[in-house]
Length: 146
Image 1 (cartoon, rainbow, N blue to C red):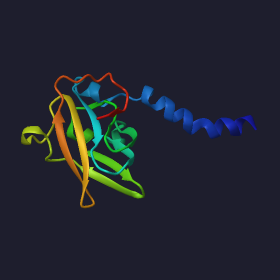
Image 2 (cartoon, rainbow, N blue to C red):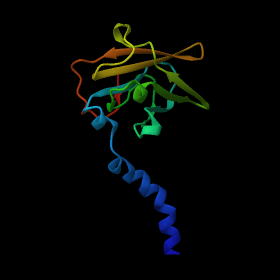
Image 3 (cartoon, one colour):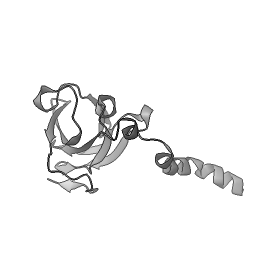
């Protein structure tokens, strides 16, 4: 009986310990990171938001964002593959937004620094605006109402 309980909890323990055991892509990049946060500028609640590259262990679960809310800051390696896709669930619909041309100054990648990804929903499609946040701090872990 005790063994069954332990085995049932194994996935929970693996999820808790995995971030501590895996090497981060930031170390391989010489600690070059982009700090990102997501803002919901639509009129609909984002029931769930994910960002990052699951295959490399750099995906981040940002949870729900109500209209006007901004997620906490999170760091990803400063390589396009790690911040290129954002998945947003709105009710029963799930959108995957691929970011290739929305960066400040028409750049194809982001330089290390802090950025806010602001999403709106227009005509059933996500629209993205990326803003550099030069004076931002990556230590604020809370959701913010803007």
